[in-house]
Length: 127
Image (cartoon, rainbow, N blue to C red):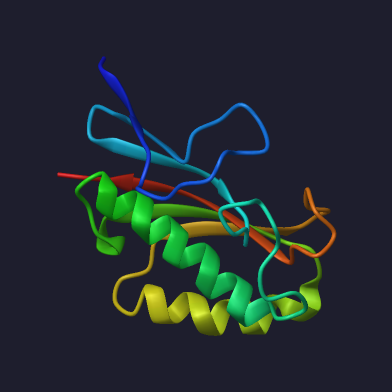
């Protein structure tokens, strides 16, 4: 098995020992993605829809850097800080996956920074 790191241009330094994406045998694993700018500051504080859009745009950048599209995403793991944001998350999510939807799960949990309302990790089959 060959494995390669996927690092889109402009990626900031992660808070922990991980990379944005890792590709092995045509399968792309996108790390848990939070609504961070390149300096790891939370963006769009208090706005779950805007944070979701930022997270999914970041994931899209990783997928495209690996040579894929969002249609290649087959599974998403979604973590929300509060269930009251669930509807806003789903509205934006549907914009990024307008056709056939990937499998997914969604849980409520604490996130690494208190102002982060969402985190998403993805798996895509590219190529």
